[in-house]
View (tube, rainbow, N blue to C red):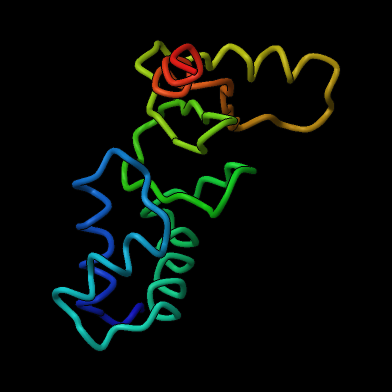
Length: 130
């Protein structure tokens, strides 16, 4: 049984209100208002635990630090290769790729992780201004 933690609950609740996929540092800076003595290490440990028990998602972008998502409903992400921003994509599911991957594979495909990448609208517009 997992011991209850107000700080862990606050991290999860904070993530549930966000769609910008904040970093651990952003979460830490925001939670310090409520918990002035919280450490960055505590935030990292709780983010790791919440990911491990399936209550949040960790998104490794390849550009900058990991991001975190409190939305556990199946959805896809776009990662901007220029600024590192992570954006939820509004699109129908593509679960049929599990069937495509299963073809010729003797194991069992149960899920998939897909990230789309390119440049976000903001980065595109800024490059046109220059």
